[in-house]
Image (tube, rainbow, N blue to C red; front, side, top):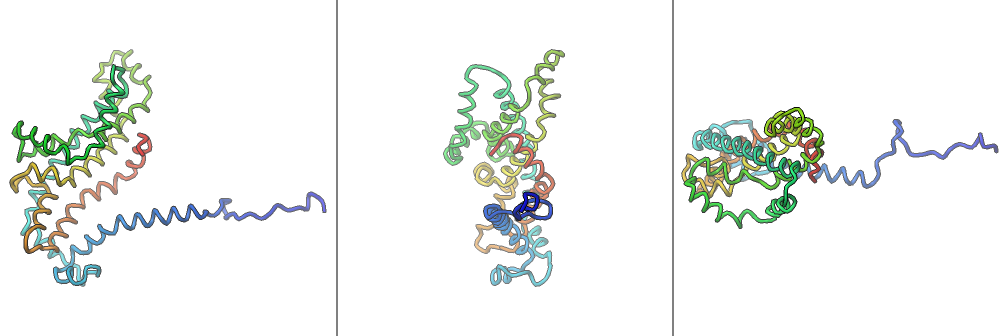
Length: 289
């Protein structure tokens, strides 16, 4: 038998030349699918339950609705001032997110591109605040809000939670990836520091800004503890606070609550569906793990 007649051993390859997935790849895919289903299941259950009557919801919580009726939504809008609470949540979320973007980008840019004494120590101190539970600092923050006469106001809901160490960390990591030559070239051309930041740095930081905006919107829209402490009258309540107080009544209208909860989730779901690719890209470019 000559060497020319010896055929290579058969390998397990697919038509396109790739090997079939191994055991670890299959387990990883199954784990990701299972985690996704577990995450989506509550949202699906709330959406289905929002179309059920109260007896059917209590008697058969896992069944499908017998008919597609919007009575829970119409009844919820009649008994629940949804538009007022939605407006408050929208105002707080939008302005708090804008303030978070402004503070995080300026602080992250300074920590990444300016050399000053104590820069690294200051950055470590900012990161250390992440380990402090929010419940520990609620009392001193509330005292500051009282001294500034911001209790029971939308400004009291917007300003205190705006500065986040996570946002500073994310923007600093992204600014470190930008070459210093961009800033040096702008300075040579006579551009001021503010104009360089606005015209050159911010346009190049669009992926990180989108990620931070999405994270901030999710935080502010779903925040419950701080608005519960600061808001003292119904006209200042946000959606999470109003829904929480509605569920604490003696006769709990679960069908109306599910309808209002699902209605309050729709804006965030729509935003996530349209911007999810920017989340993956921005997190990958900022090095956030």
